Amino acid sequence: MRFAPRQLALALAITLAAGTAAAAGKTLIFCSEGSPAGFDPARYTTSTDFDASAETVFNRLSEFEPGSTKVRPGLAEKWSVSADGLTYTFNLRKGVKFHTTAYFKPTRDFNADDAVFTLQRLIDKNLPFNKAAPAEYSYATDMGLDTNIVAVSKLDPYTVQVKLKAVDAAFIQNLAMSFASVQSAEYAEQLLKAGKANMINVEPVGTGPFVFKSYQKDAAIRFEANPGYWRKDEVKLDKLIFAITPDASVRYQKLQKNECQVMAYPRPADLKAMQANPQLAVASQAGFNEGWIAYNVKHKPLDKLEVRQALDMAINKKAIIDAVYQGAGQLATNPMPPTQWSFNKTLKDAPLDVAKAKSLLAKAGVGNGFEITLWAMPVQRPYNPNAKLMAEMIQADWAKIGVKAKIVTYEWGEYIKRSKGGEHDAMTIGWTGDNGDPDNWLGVNLGCEAVGGNNYSQWCDKKFDDLVVKARSLSNQAERTKLYEQAQVVFKEQVPFTPIAHSTVYVPMRKEVTGYKISPFGLTSFYGVGLK
Image (cartoon, rainbow, N blue to C red; front, side):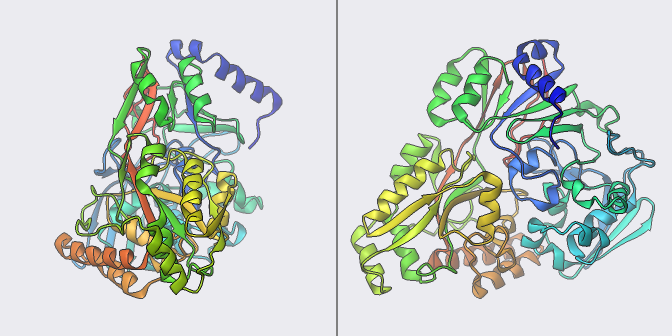
């Protein structure tokens, strides 16, 4: 949705007058790092998209407590699980209202119809709304929810039952994730009748703390407080603006001038100066994240294990961690961080060895080298503060073994879309855990169901996948741990991607900001955030 000229002028005036706004204690401006691809959380997998929709406009049936991995009731007041672990019954919260906007005026409160529509959308391609607005629900597919949920039923106006095909130990945590944000079935029906179903991704309607007002790509997103929000103590701002600012140096300049009060993803080189500035506060937390280099195993010669092993052992990780993370990174060896339960402590990296890497390429029949594309993310992430520099360093490392890497980049939405389509050879990417469960790392990023989604390596290994799928169906954590540890061994043997680093998360903000909590899942949320 683009601003009208008058709206744009107002938005820019608000941005430039941020100091006055902050003093009034009503408007908070967040200097974000990129434009969202859309506002329908079910379609996306990145925090840029979730921050601008799920974390502002929407709620979910279950939710994570702000700043925590602990699940709390959301739009479902409570739930029960059958003895066999296959049937979930949700008792829904009464009196919750959907947003009233210029484009939608609800005639009823949230009820079971909305919960049923939200979940059926993820699993039923023949749903009339899905036929009118075709979309990939990558996250649900990557986690196998689209095939594991076999029935969603409305038992009464405030009770919904969900039946699963197999036990999913993290089902409640999964429903607390951004992609499962609850949509208005009434709004969807209105759009369907008007022949505008795709507008659900442009003009969002939710029950969350902020109401969407307007958006101009690469400029700003404007929200206003939801006056009827059911958790009244979590709305302490009148207005919230995302000032989209891709350059970290410019974000820092705006923060210093009080043109924004919170900024995303600082440059590591700026942290000392930020911490020394008496007008700023820099919140930090050990990151539940990992950055890596994914190899598209469907592209030759990356389909050969020896080639992936050679590329892996040619990368000087220590040099990258020193230059890119500048003291805020820790070496990654596994496909998950060491703070995740079931992390296999026995796994070690292959040593940096240029000579051996060359011999492996020769064994694979490409001893004279080859050309490859190496995609560099256009945005910063907690797991990768400078993808361009990382790509340049890897390019130099691979040149030493005769591999010529051409660095490629795209606008973020296009980058994700093209890479999920498998256009890349190798790429910088990574992950911040979304629910505290190992399946959120191994299944979502490496499972066979995630090929074409978040499995950017396009890698489907039956031995690995069988272990992960079986672990997902168990409730005993010790038994699940053994299976996940075995799966990590398979990963290390097959090298679908090269783990690079885990990083500490930093969030710089003005001292006037109150109540901000760092999300362990890499999201930016303003629940309970205010201004002095």
